[in-house]
Length: 349
Image 1 (cartoon, rainbow, N blue to C red):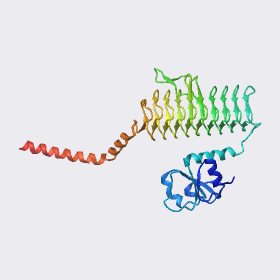
Image 2 (tube, one colour):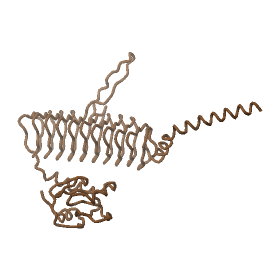
Image 3 (cartoon, one colour):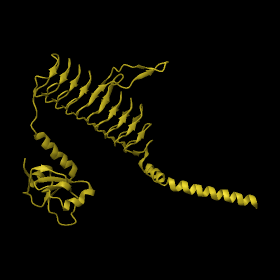
Image 4 (spheres, rainbow, N blue to C red):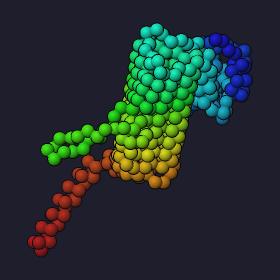
């Protein structure tokens, strides 16, 4: 596809500074920009690249003011990153969509399959399962009995959805995701062994949820583990039994959430955050990377860091002190020596 800077600006409701007729056919990072590509600038640490980039068009925030002459055409928009997302979504929607049911797929006669679906070779769809219109299911995906999958949802290769689980409309599940595997439920026996506790619940994934590759969402012991509308889960995330995640919460890679924890709306967890079980996290909570959460967060819209977590300002003070511990230790040893010498002097008076 080929678009002019003017056409892009009209679509994004932006303002062109430079040549409105310059054409672009693809996208590039600003530091690797080539003629005929469109790039963007949203992070200030990349600002210096805008003066050297070869990209023909660069999206910038409306408050950007160049400090010297530019060789590229810029389009000023409200938010360059969000505008790029709109363009990428347009490109994605323009790609041809796969359709049809491959004869090498197995579909139970009792399953209900919507219109305009794509079901790839070696997909298994169990009894009484429902697949909505325009949904795409890629090879080696297992859809268990009584599973419900909504419309316009995409399940990439190798996904496993256990029986009785439900996935909403406009969801994306990446390769290797497991939905509804057993929660980690075992009762200790008197002889030191463990007796498995049957996990009879399910998982409910509401509309517009995206789950990254090789993430696992365990079924509830009873009832449902729930990912509410708009949740975004990165790769390699584990949510245990009966976990509930509120609307539009996002979790980066390698987060782990223990059983029966309830997470509020619009929370953000950076990579490798770990949460204990049976706690609640208030709406709008932000937790920094590699933090450990051992107790509930009750006040909304606060930022935490550390293990155990503390408010971020206090954690930074703690880290600053921690970096000085070797010097502080040396000072203490010197003070101890001085005190010992003073005691000896006083004793000999």
